[in-house]
Image (cartoon, rainbow, N blue to C red; front, side):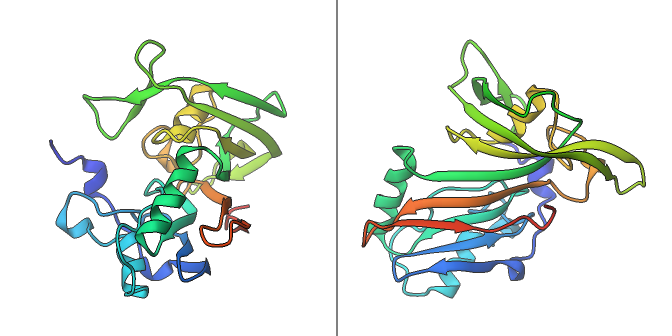
Length: 231
């Protein structure tokens, strides 16, 4: 399988990763944009959030990955520190009992204050890593959104554009789901190099802001929030 130019352009700073919360069994980090969640196919892209966590927590046993964030997306990322915790936490994602909330800045002013996007998706097999809408062969993908602000934003080239700030709630976990859904409704996320105008912002303005899950040891609900730098 050929390596995409997109992956060849990966450049993130692992030193910008911060720990939001941790126990002996899991850790939640704030992943910066430009950092992979898991190793890429190219050798120079093996450094990632997962490898960073393994270095910080050398006592880790078993698989560490529970879920992923797109390379360009920043925000809360949960990692397991033992095999049983990984199994339990991954199961929560599969059962859709994990709460996730994102913030994004998109082009234009949405007419409605809130809404639901129910648009099936699948990979574009001829143009990876792109995902595409496909009503015949795509898998179910649902996202709810709430407009939290409307206004203007100055692009890096100095041009002022109309924008909306959204709170996005993904009900499914398809790759690039929020980015594809925002483009589908005519309001691509600013700075999106795949599905929008990469020159509209210096980075993808999409951030995993809130995360809720059940602690695998106590069963208590863990609720964490990390505001976006661009809010």
